[in-house]
Image 1 (spheres, rainbow, N blue to C red):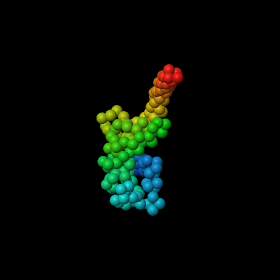
Image 2: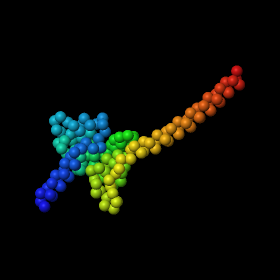
Image 3: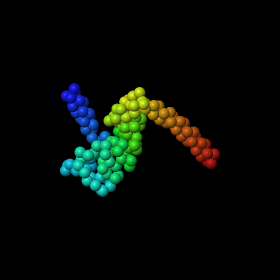
Image 4: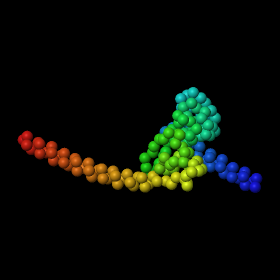
Length: 163
């Protein structure tokens, strides 16, 4: 029994640390991978061991040490949403049992966030959203082309009348 619990705890820790840079903007990743093992808060107001990034405790006043958790009220979470548009959400929406990112990454580390829901496992809906948006954009393109053709005809008609 004890070995089973230790194994389960090990799996939990391994999964939590498997992606310590969840929620980080791609252009900001370098700041989260310091060569000296020290993370500097984005506002310049603190330095802490890089191991404390995404540890669910807000060490930096600006929330920059917790991009993948809801520990800091000032924090932001970056959703990659591969196949669709990336977005940035308030950190308070991470692990709340509601799938805000179409890739489900905001809930991935919190599988039991809300026991009232049947399931907090978010399916990746990015491809379906992209397909829906493509249909919408194609429809908008057809409408725009029709409007531009009508404008062109009006301008040509006005030019012909002036000539």
